[in-house]
Length: 220
Image (cartoon, rainbow, N blue to C red; front, side):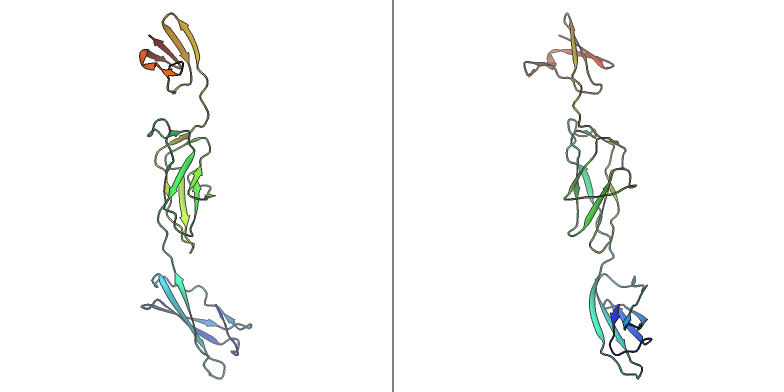
């Protein structure tokens, strides 16, 4: 887009875009207000980097206007793919069950924006800094996703967190204890880890543990 002075409406403007090796030529028309636009120009053959734009025209009498030149930067390359990982996979470091809801995001380019999705890409939320928090839930493999957009508007490929993830920030229920002779019965949360403490000291190893459903029997 450009403007002219002293050039009649309807005159042609010759525009050349060049990356120094390849040229793209296009013709625009001066409008009633003296402006012209080279719209819908295909510059896919030009290389990324500095592009020189040169525009020239003539008035109705054939007098040439001084050519105008401007440099722009062409960037149509997608930014790199982000990486993401749980900040901490608590308790068991490889089971994907965690009480820490933070996901760290790496590879964010300077001046880029980024987004994350927790539903497989159906909805996106703008990210800040280099991490985000997962709502407490269970997530299937690949549904936690991130992508970034660089300052030129190019969007990266989507990166997904590998493996199913369960975020559980609630403390387990308090176990119920009962004793019959040398048998101590514990009713607690299924899937939890049992520890037997004596005045704060872990004495679990002193017992033989038998688990039945949500009940555990410890014999000493």
